[in-house]
Image 1 (cartoon, one colour):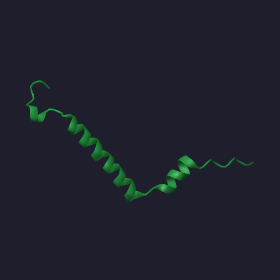
Image 2: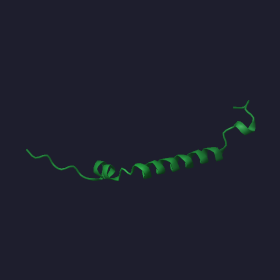
Image 3: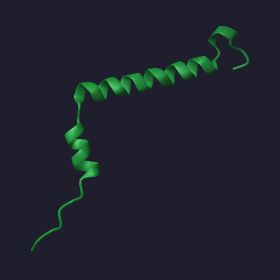
Image 4: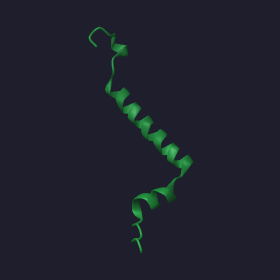
Length: 52
């Protein structure tokens, strides 16, 4: 990256901005889809024991 001008180099503020936009996008997607029942059923509820 030594050959790139200073404006094109990756800056720490660029990484921070990209991470914050990623969190915002993921939060927005969860808000729109709202899979709370699926998350609860998949990760929080214990499976019922099998009966024969």
